[in-house]
Length: 195
Picture (tube, helix red, strand yellow):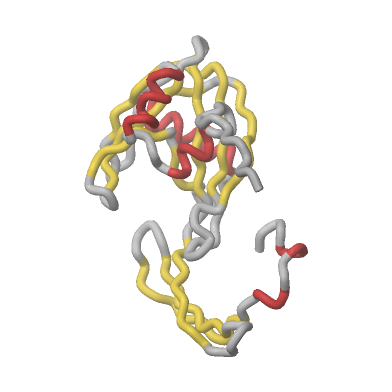
C-alpha cells in the first residue's frame, strides 16, 4: 500500500474478489486479479506485474560530470542513454542496491549519497517502487561488471551533453528523467493558462 492510502476516495476503491498466479516472466511475476468495479459492480480480470523494487541514480563525478549508461532496450528495439539503475536484491536496502548497481554497471563508486525519493513506475500494472539516489563525487574504482544479460557502454558527460541527449530523444527513459528532474531543472516552467 502506498503512503497516500489514507487520503484515497473509498468510492473509487476496487475490491479484489479472487487472484491467480500467472507465468513467471523472469523480471516479473504475473498475477491476475478478479476486481469488482465500484461504479457498476462488474467483476473484471486485471493483470499485475510483480517485481522487487528498483533503483536508479544520478551519479556525478568530482568535476561535476554525469555517469550515464547506454544500452539496448528490447521494447523499443534501440539503444538509449540512461542513468544507471537496476533491481533491489532480496534483503538489500535501496542505498546498497544503488551503490552495487553503479559499481557493476559503470565501475564508479565512492562519493556522498543522498535519497531523492521514489516513484511508482506504472501503478496501473506494477505494485513496486523505483528509488532515486544522488551520488556526488563518484570516481572510477573498478572495471564495470555487467550481468550476463547486459551489454552496457559507460558515458561520462557534461550537463550540456545530457541536455542534448534529452533534446535529441536519445534520453527519454521516464525513470531516468524522473531522477534527473530531482537534481536539474530539465524543462522551463510554462506560464499558467489564462482563464
